[in-house]
Image (cartoon, rainbow, N blue to C red):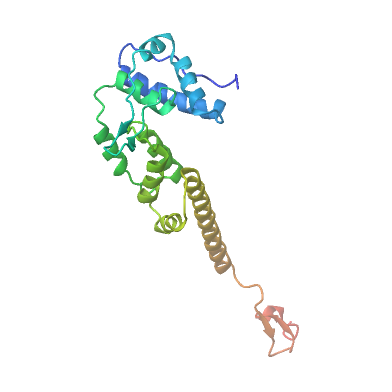
Length: 229
C-alpha cells in the first residue's frame, strides 16, 4: 500500500484544533485503506508514527484514568487504555482543542437527521465524523442508534428495528441495499412512464377493418380501396 498518500505530520503551529481535525480525517481514511484489518493496538502506534516526533513527545505527558468501581467492587468505568486508538485520539483532541465541549458535540450528533435529498452514505459518513468528538466508549453502538433514529425512510427504520443484534456494519449494509433498491425502483418507474407516453403518442398502425365497398380489410382510406380505384 505504499502508493497511498499518508497524512502529513500533525502541526502544532497556527490553528492547532483545525490541524488536528484535518489530521484525524486523513488518518481515518489512510488507516482503513492501508491497514483495515489491523488491531487497535497497532492502529494506535501507526497514529503516533504518522503524527510525528513532536506529537510523540507530547503523548508521553498524557495521563490515563484508572478504572472506577462502586461500593460492591463492580467496575462501573473501565480504565483508559493507552494502546487504544480511540483513547489516544481523545487525548490528542484534548491537547489540540481543550475548549471542546463534549455535551455540545453529543447534542449535535443526537439531533442530526438525514436531509430530504441527502444520500444515505453522506448521512452515515457525517455521523461517523461527528462521533469522533463525542468521546463515546461504545462509539459504533451510538452511531448505529443515530442512523436508525435519523433516517428519512420509515420503512428502512422498521426493517432495522425488526432485526436482533444489529451491528453498525449490518446497519450500514442494510442502508446501502435499501438505497440501491430505491434508486432502481425510481429508474424503473421513470422508464415505464416514458414508455407509456411514447406508446400513447404513436398512432395505431392496426386501424384496418372490412371495407363496405370491396369486402376486403385495409386501412380506412377510400384511395386504397380496389373497388373504387
